[in-house]
Image 1 (cartoon, rainbow, N blue to C red):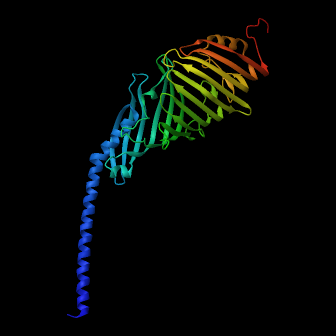
Image 2: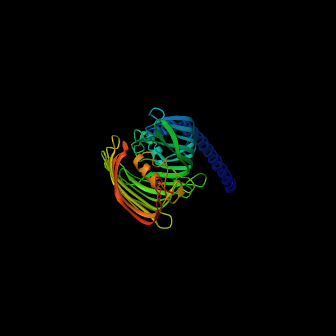
Image 3: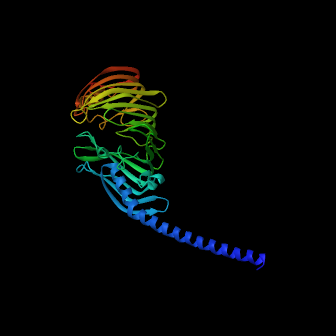
Length: 369
């Protein structure tokens, strides 16, 4: 046999072995793919559903689930319900789609853990019961992870926030905003979380942005900065563009301290509030210090003004009678000490100083025109 024939035979042998190995690699790849898909549907899908349920602490309903090859689970028609009774309970959140992405290394270690969760096209009903001073959102417990590891990073897109108040058993809408947001655990810092909340122009509050840090626990702290632009979406007739907003709150058992809350509005207006609230779930004893600098006081409704009307004064019958009789309007400053109980605002005490820059007063009970 010549050397040329030997080389040709060797090439054919190498080619057959290479093709045979390539075929086995392909078969092995297909088997791994089928096994991976089976693991995804049989194991990762139930784990994702369980971890998302464990993140909320509320009653959870899930429509259907899908698994894709890049360790992504999609949940369609997710609904969270408060465990409280009607009308204070009911639906807290409804999301058309929730996407959960597993940490690759957690899957390899056979301890699957969601690393990212994204909510798309969702509605949030934030409801405050003024009779019992409780929020339906209190049913959520987002500071724990059912997997024992760090919480996933949560992104929210194309959402709607509906703010409501319950008074005398009747639900009243306050505001609606189109929102987006993010919530995540601060790396390497225990029980500390960062968040972002923004409003788009689809509904009210367009351009509003809030960023903050929350240190959870029995003795916690909350720091928030940003702006809230109410625009043409008033609450009780008042619509403020609150810029340069800063909020610092600290709390422990039965005591909540407003260490700093201030913002600017209009051309020169400034508001500052500090104080404490004790036994919030009971009578809610409070002591507040309020300072309002260079604001315009009007009767009725208005934008970037301090407007008083029947809705605002519903819990303050004596103050309502005084303002309706004298109908003050104009620009001025206010320093106010306000003490009392949230359970009985009508019996609260106001003590302060009013500086009149340009105020008009009309005594509607004056007997002569």
